[in-house]
Length: 333
Ligand SMILES: NC(=O)c1ccc[n+]([C@@H]2O[C@H](COP(=O)([O-])OP(=O)(O)OC[C@H]3O[C@@H](n4cnc5c(N)ncnc54)[C@H](O)[C@@H]3O)[C@@H](O)[C@H]2O)c1
Ligand SMILES: O=P(O)(O)OC[C@H](O)CO
Image (cartoon, rainbow, N blue to C red; front, side, top):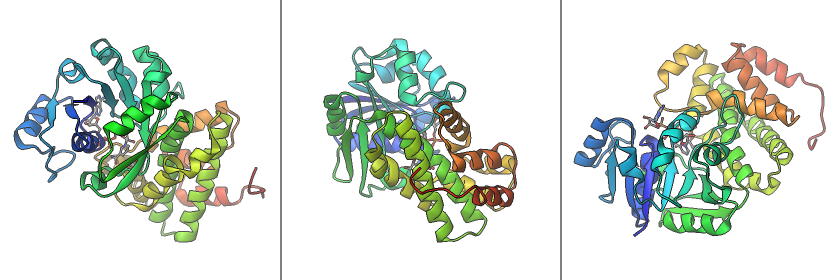
């Protein structure tokens, strides 16, 4: 039987552990708090992140990283992006030899502007062939309700992506493979920033033309960045690009979208942070995505606008006027 370790028992870690168990894997689910692990094992429910959802018997929760990592054929990493480096440094000595590391995270590291797979290869000292990324339109609550969805598993070694694909394929979860790791990761990270922008527009009372414009021009700036970084532009019209953008920008389940909506309605950043119980990656990653754009000489006006609202306190109405009064451009440049 395939053994999987999932490091991170938040909403996506727990929902994905369910997917793996439904696909026939034996799953160890690691989280920081021993009392929560105990409660999950006793009640088969993660009350903090997926209340009301019964977890399959093949999932065992633990707060001991060595126990979780033991003998795992693959090790899934699903903690907030900005905490990955520190966490993985502690876990690396415990990882099973030859385990494949699978990132479910959608962020870019602040300061280094590194993608999560880059942080993983660096910190765990493993070759890129042993690191995969799973991404796509996967709102945790819907997956936990076993509603049909698709995803992408990306790895530079397609056979490794196929192994992960097999390990997590269920009647309701359909993963495709891809070898464009850069494009898949950028799709996931930048969509959170665009999700914030669409949420802000929503909170300001703007309609569907405005939101469709942000989604489309958001995809344009994601693709520009991807091209500059060597990604395949076709990735952005797939599940990791357009697919995830549509899910995030249209769903009130998206934490990034909701965060933006609260800001657009006039809440302060501090009030919005206080109202957000889970990880909204775009809040921090908008700065690292902008950094990445600058490092590659790519103009990212929507990302820049989001940073100015979220981190510089610019009123959304002022930021919107500035965005709309930029010089005239050709669509494809
Ligand atoms: N929730 C979704 O629908 C979804 C879907 C796809 C991808 N993702 C991505 O998955 C990643 C995790 O998101 P999530 O939704 O599970 O977040 P979450 O907020 O629901 O859970 C985060 C988990 O990380 C833990 N955590 C927080 N700080 C930590 C630290 N310093 N060290 C160790 N653990 C820590 C929390 O205790 C919790 O278990 C993000 O990158 C997100 O973009 C989420
Ligand atoms: O809740 P969000 O905004 O982190 O989005 C969740 C997933 O990434 C959607 O695919």
